[in-house]
Length: 206
Image 1 (cartoon, rainbow, N blue to C red):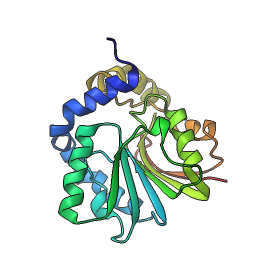
Image 2 (image 1 turned 90 degrees about the vertical axis):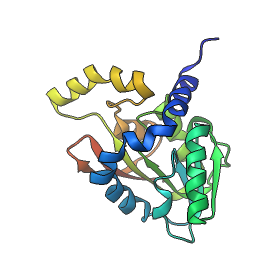
Image 3 (image 1 turned 180 degrees about the horizontal axis):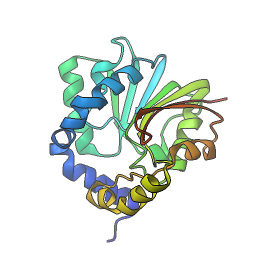
């Protein structure tokens, strides 16, 4: 039976879960760890982390955080569960797809994503679900790969996008700021974390 796009990407992340941290080790040490630490420590109240992956953000939350973490890859989630046990931290880890969140409207004060929306098959649908579960005034904190606005760099990212998509389902040319507007967010701030292809984003639900 032919897998749909979500099942295909889940399969790819399940496949690379055992070596995911190794593949990302250099960039993690040089840049991502510092950025994710600064981002995550802004989170407060009832928090949902979307795409918790192997649990890289878990050590950086405040110790008393009211935290839920979801991922649609069970093998990635198993890695996060090991981290949570080692930290002896209270976090609810659930297998769930951001495109169909099993939470009531207005459930969370804050949602966190780090390098997630390059891989969500329907990013606008996923962002709309986050908008739904955020409380009014709640914030979405993101560290995300995006398409460059540069004429040459942006086109190059479009041409090369098939390579990471084929390997593990990550798109390098997502227009995440535009997608946030489409999903219902009107109050959006962003700054460059690295060049203009990795951005810190804060979006607030009206």
